[in-house]
Image (cartoon, rainbow, N blue to C red; front, top):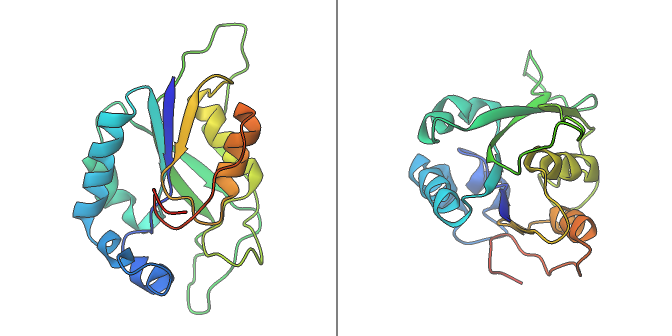
Length: 179
């Protein structure tokens, strides 16, 4: 089976967080770029895909998705608190679609995970290893499958995929196709 995970720059934060790292990051400050990404994943990854986003964009991005998508939650027991923000952003939605069917004898995966944010990785938005494993569990990724990390960033997701699928880790960059 063929799967994908996308962690695009979050809608409205792309230029601010990644503008100094990639000249075309600001395109993800538009809903149209996220729609194009969803369309691409639906076309290229019919077996399943998952996409991270932030809570303010959920009401914009979820209606762009097919009706059979689900929303899961990454709950952050330790999260950074921002000055002037009265209610912390301590969870992030993950929209996912498809995945391998589980046998009745196989373990059920929760639609939420509690994992602390990463610290001092040198890359904004780097995902913790436990989160990466959980995303693969949502889709029920198995050795022999392929799973593409469409926004390699820090390389953390790619390393977790390589570990799960027993592959060599792939080079990383901010956007797919970069090394």
